[in-house]
Length: 342
Length: 283
Image (cartoon, rainbow over all chains, first blue to last red; front, side):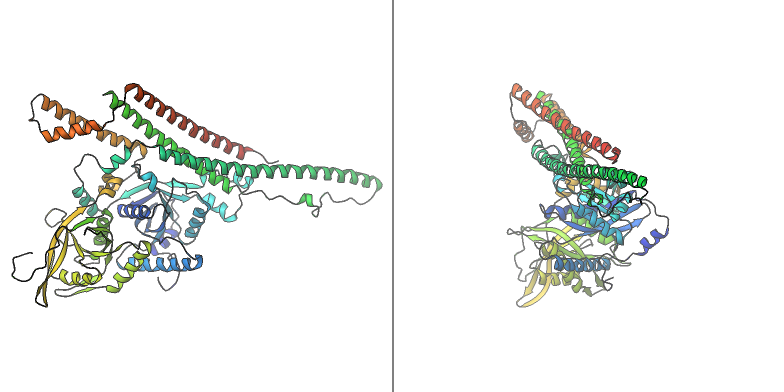
């Protein structure tokens, strides 16, 4: 492993076997409790910096088991040096973990996010990088801030196959998207998450569970001051709206140019036709109805729709966060009301 | 341990508390499950920090391969070193604070390992997790050692059990329900979690109600300290005039409704834009 110098491991037996079979779509990501705790630990400790780490596990049919993970050192410093360094770190860590019989199989990566603002081009790039080496991989997103509200804000994502095909060709024009009927909803696919624990952990935890009727999680959930979170959410939403309107302007500009060009082309064609008609009568050779050298026939490049798709996704995400959150707040406010009536 | 002796005994490290993070426990269990065939126990390094008052916080751990025979222990020191370096790069604040082993108590060879870790850090903590449940409970214990010496000669190491604080706060945050079952099919979403918490709150209030009623009707002898706690809790609820509260209540409801409306409006707009975008025929 250490000698071949590849960052992401060569395909293991399990993966090789899986690829031999007819590929089953990935249905469930099964995460070990240990991994959940490790991810949370890493993401929380490094707040507010956003961090990433590697997921290790097994790929079994339609279930992807994530059995261990390790954090990446946070970035900073020279890019090239960092990269080589990071690769070394990764190799070394995996070698060490394999020595103590940890599953030595990359299945994806995890990253922390701030208020769910993870839909970026970088994420897509990273995903494709991973995908090149491992057929099935997921990205686990953890939101430390939202988890402070008493929910486990953990989700597993992957890119849809249709989107990946399209991304490889970098062809994000309206026509292609329509052809594939790919909408912004089809970029990411959320995979249901299951959490598993070994029997040993399970019995240990049952033993250690406190008898206290209320746990930290209850306190977190029942906190009444929800405004800061809501405000942040709206702030991001407004930013996204600005971005979206910028994108929209780009498109308007494009369409305006396109329309102008087309009308110019029409005028030119008209002229050419009347000229040709005149030539025909005079018995002269006809001129071609196209002139590639004329600047008005130069095609205008349609701007990529990827950005606007991602922004739309982002907005949708914020909206659903706001929705869920206000739902919670309603309950809390009514709870307070009930208290005061007593 | 700790039998009476006439030798010079350094004063025991009284008052040292070790705080244990749940991540470490999970890690230890996992490493035990993944141990080599015929390996009796697993040992590993504990990482964390020591605060000025002597409290040791154990926050992270990793397994270290080792070999054991009747009177010999070989710990893979290189492995320990390289793993420590790797961990340092992620979190330089975590230093070696001790080691763990998955056995039910302290055995003879532990002194040798303790000796090794004593070279890495002064006063290493030795954590034992009984993964075999030998006396039907999961006994988790922490020890520190002191060296018995006669003049200049070191005779033995003595292990003292120290207080262990299982900091399960992190585990509580996630919820025990997720961590104690062998399989959880679905993560609870925002509202389900809140529902649970409110249910628990309701139960607690009911318990208190029943208790107060029982006391008032003379079924249970009153307990002053409980009464004081209850009074304290009730006085925590801020007193707001009903009109003021109504206004507050209505305001927040209005705010929330507005926010909800805006969010849904945005979503509708997106859906509409989507339809227009894909439907529009570009000439």
